[in-house]
Length: 157
Image (tube, rainbow, N blue to C red; front, side, top):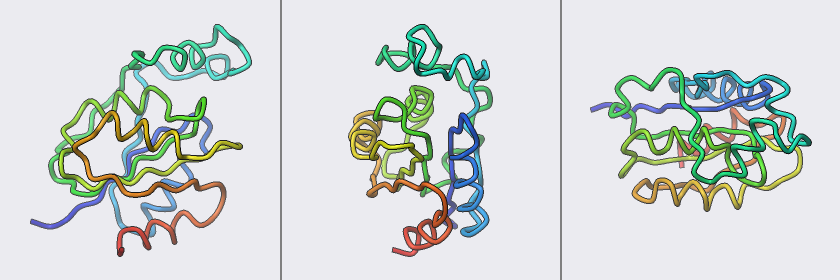
């Protein structure tokens, strides 16, 4: 069976999407955008507003926003990059929805994130707690350039 790679990402503002697309072009991986059933508006993403949708979701660890279109044939992938912006020091809750929607047991999981200032460490711990049977690789914070080179390096490691 041929080894296939998927780059699954959630992007609220387009920054994570740019990194994911750059990585897919460089590696030939399939690209999948984790799209919320109910798209986020700019008001939803206003983290200064305690009542905004993103703040309410992030303040509730059990929140699992619905995803619009599931990945078809997830079993064909043995390596999955999971990309997201850092929200409140961790991955957005919709990424938890994604992780809990499939059996990633034994699959190589590689997190990458974009962030204005937070590191990826807390997110890595959180991701592992949602998918303990996956084989997690050290993640990378990708702000700006270098996503393509990093993805190629990780896949060839």
